[in-house]
Length: 217
Length: 170
Image (tube, rainbow over all chains, first blue to last red; front, side):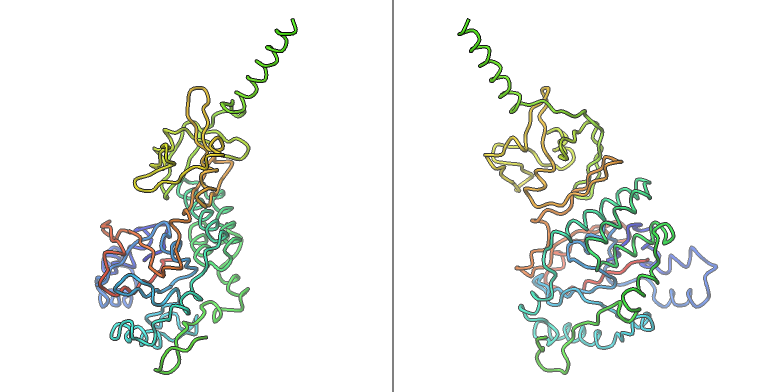
C-alpha cells in the first residue's frame, strides 16, 4: 500500500520498475539491471493517496506490516516490516528474523508461534484516541489544501497533525516531500537526531525468542 | 387600555419566543468547501454561526449523501437519531430554507473536524463508527486502486492470508 499523496505519479515508478526505466534511459546501468531483474511485481500493490490504511490501522511509519488471517482477523498488528536489508545501515535491523517469522506463519497459520495471543494483541493495538482522530483530520485538510494549490496554508495543518500525533513519521515525511524541508522549517535528518539517531527510528519487531510458544512481554 | 397593553405585551413575548425557535441567522451566507469521506464539495452558501457550520439540507445530501428523515440523519442503512430535546441545535428554518448544523452533527457522531478559516474549508474525518474497533480484532475494511485504477477490497482476500505492508516513495 503506497502511502503517497502524489498517487500514481509518485508511487508508480516503484510499482512498475520496467516502465520506470524505459521512461528514463539515462539511469545508471545498475538501476536498469536491478529493475529488469525485479520485473513487474507479482503481488497486489495498491495506491493510497489519502493515507486511508494509515488512518484505519493507526500506522505512524513505513514500512509497517500487519498480518491478517483467512478470517480477516489481525494476528500481528503494526510493526516495522523489512523484507530485505536495503535500509539496514540506517535502521540497524536485520530482515532475516522477520522473514523467518513470516514464513513460519505462511506454513503453520494460526498455530505459528509468531501469531499473537488476543491479550497481547489488545495490548499492542493503539487505543482509539480523540487526538489521533483529530490529527488525521488536520492532515486530511492539509492534503486537500495542498492539492487545491494552497501550500502555505497546508503546512499549518500538517504541523497541527504532528502536534496532535507526534509519533507519526508519515505525517512529517509526507509533508516534507510535498512542501520541501526548507519551507517546512526542519529536516528529516534533524528530526531523526532529536529522537537519538537512526537506530532509534524503528522499534524492532516484537518477535518471540526461540521456537517455543510466544513469550508475553 | 389595560387589556390592549397586555395583549401587546403578549404579542411581543410571542414574537420573541418565535424568533428564538424559528430564529434569524445573525451572519451572512458565505461560500464554503466541505470535505466529507475525502471528497470535496463546493457550497455556494453556508453559514458560520458561533463557530458552528450550517449548510442547507440540499447541500447536506449533495456533500455527504446523508438526509434528515423523521427517524434521524440517514444514509443507506445507517441512521443517527437526533436527540429530541436538542433538535433545534441541529435543524433550523430560515428565510424558507432548511439548514443543518454540520458541526453539531459531527460532535454527535464523534467525528473530528478540521477547519481553515481563511479558505472557508471544513474537513470531516472518520466518524467513530468508521474507526478501528479494537475489541473485535477484525481488520478494518477498505477499497483502494492498483496502478491501473482497478479497485481492490481487503475483504475480497478472505480465505487467504494477507501480509499487508505500507511503503512510500518519499
